[in-house]
Length: 132
Image 1: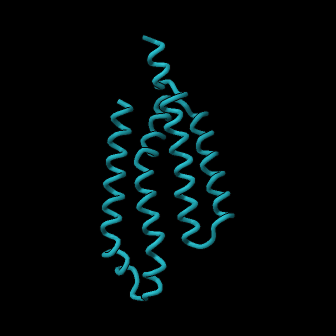
Image 2 (image 1 turned 90 degrees about the horizontal axis):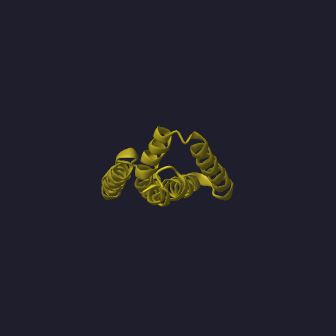
Image 3 (image 1 turned 135 degrees about the horizontal axis):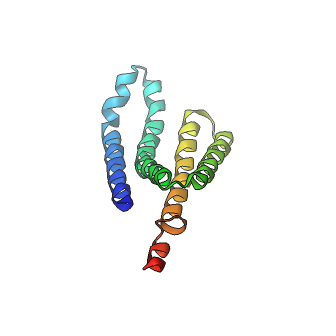
């Protein structure tokens, strides 16, 4: 069931990212008539598409960990996510920097969640094989 949830959430996240990416030429002009503002909004909007792609499996992975009662592990992963975001905030500046910080910290969180799910947690493949 958890595998199905991750697969569906990845599909939905991919579809939202694709919809966001395809609609950028139509959405960006709606928010401002100033050409400089439109130009400044393009890169953060592209990064947001990537964040949508990552958020699908991240949200499902967090839900799986909560459902399994792995709160300590989820706390460690979330702490790594926050530490990465704070480090990126100090490295990058401006709106693009904020979006890059969210994107890069989301990669760290996704790696932590999938690593826990596949290798460490109660549903890890190695643990399922050893119980048979």
